[in-house]
Length: 267
Ligand code: 4AZ
Image 1 (tube, protein in one colour):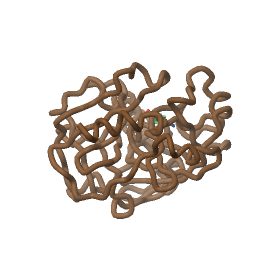
Image 2 (cartoon, protein in one colour):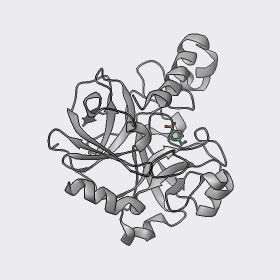
Image 3 (cartoon, protein in one colour):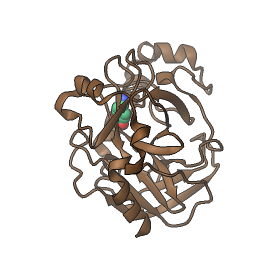
Image 4 (cartoon, protein in one colour):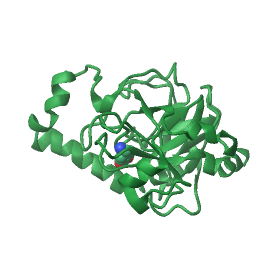
């Protein structure tokens, strides 16, 4: 599967924490998150409900392992990252909606009948990290509109944006059992250029995070939403580590891909 390398990285992190460094590497997290408890510390996140954010979904393998996020933009269409679906067969992917707790059976599990990957996608640092999934049914969950070329104001530096996901709570740490959310300010393009140099392309990407770090998306959040002004403006894509000062999270700039996404919705 395409997510193999990506997932392997997450798994290695989990394995290291679980088997090799049981006490040491979870030091902060374990103090704040007793088993079965909710963390508020995790890369600055807090618990959220899919009742509040019904359009946030996660991608899982056929055995139920959550590996990426996604956003419902039409009853049977999910926007996610190309690096989440690259090389995957539609039959291998499940979309889970309406389930805050991965250990529950709440909500709906849809199958995927088609995976569209941006034809120019090669690598997250080049851009085009966009994919649209077609589901085998229309979901009842509310959808969210996505940014178009008319929404450039939503990308102003300093705009408060919301990140959501079930990913890891620290770089190389373990994934969250529960849906988490946080708000982060969009950075300027020059700030992101300073962090990432030629890997940052302002046409294809937008960055978000505090200069001091502390709040960010992380492994397993990829493909999930960055929301501002009631619209999907970004797709969680990449970054150096997670929540590190000077290294904001990088998101696919949805307005750049609005026409392509709309074509997939219409298809
Ligand atoms: C990842 O590997 C990933 N801090 C997602 C987001 C960020 C870094 C890595 C941003 O899925």
